[in-house]
Amino acid sequence: MKKLQILAAIVVLAAGIFSSCKKASSNNNTSTPTSTYYVIANIVGGNPPSWVASTVSGSNSGPLGSGTITILGTMADGESITLTFPNNVTPGYYPWNTAPTYVTESYTLNSSPSGYYNATSGSITIKSISLTGAVSGTFTFNALDQTNNATVNITNGSFNVKL
Picture 1 (cartoon, rainbow, N blue to C red):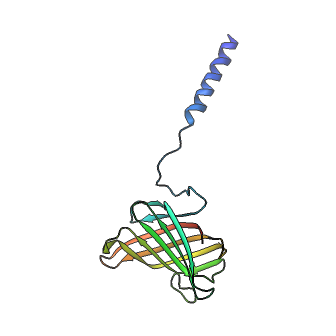
Picture 2 (cartoon, helix red, strand yellow; picture 1 turned 45 degrees about the vertical axis):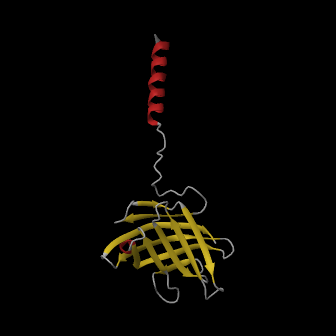
Picture 3 (cartoon, rainbow, N blue to C red; picture 1 turned 180 degrees about the vertical axis):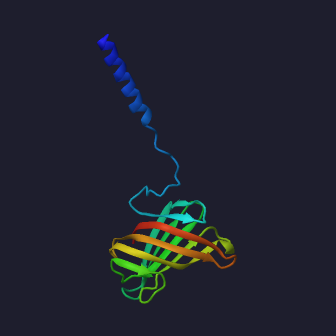
């Protein structure tokens, strides 16, 4: 009888363990990067609310100190986030459109005139930068579509992009 009680306890315990395990979601619409290089964010007022770029690119144009770094994250449907800042930045916090860095940010919902949002406030924090390697950091911004006064809030953004 005691063996039967022990066996029953083991079965109940095993059932509890296995029932608590569940398959990971296959939803591609999460804020978790799926590769070494990424651009991700939460978009309030946009679609989808959690945003992960399917392709990312970074470019460094112009000589050091007078050029810019542009980061572009794009989803398969063309929706994109663009970040631009001077190529002489060092790790640190940079508010939107303030001298001497003049950070700019934009969000494109689609290619129609009413799908392009320019930042009205925000910031970028550069965590690391190598002009021959990669740049990583975080960002947030509020943006306005001037054709219809629609707004989006981009929060908890982060990036790691090869230049």
